[in-house]
Structures are given as C-alpha cells and as structure tokens.
Amino acid sequence: MQSVTFNSVLEEIETLSSEDQAALIVILQRRLIESRRAKIAANIAQAKQDYQSGNVFRGTVDEAIAQLNQ
Image (cartoon, rainbow, N blue to C red; front, side, top):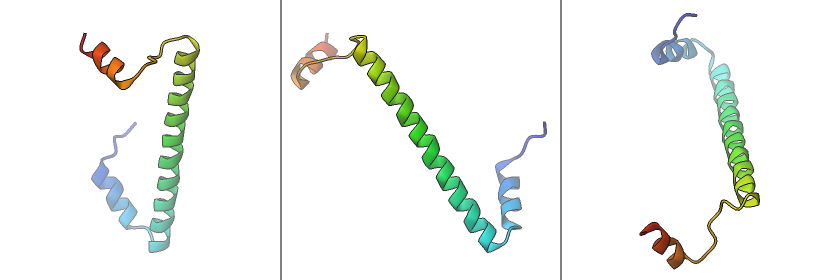
C-alpha cells in the first residue's frame, strides 16, 4: 500500500471545486463527531462496568485527596 502524505492530500483537496471542498468539510466534521460519540460511549460502558464491579471511589473530595496523598 502506498503511503500518502498530509501535504499530498491537501494538494488533492485543492483540486476539488469549492462545493466539493465544503461537502468534504461537512463529512469530516460528522465523522469526527461520530468518533467522539463512540469514544464517549466506550467510556460510559467502562464506567458502568467499573461501578457494577465496585471499582469506583466513593467519598468526599477531602477523602479523595487524602487517599491520593497516601
């Protein structure tokens, strides 16, 4: 597989029409949003699993700081 550089991608994008460039921006933004959503969902699933297995800290801020200082 041939390696593609960032600059070569930018040069290719510059050959697109303004409308296609705008459409590409929208597509990339949507993909980034979906990627972030997937990461958030994975973090939530892990947090739920940790909570259900009792692997979470419960207490006040002062108790958390005291535990960190041990």
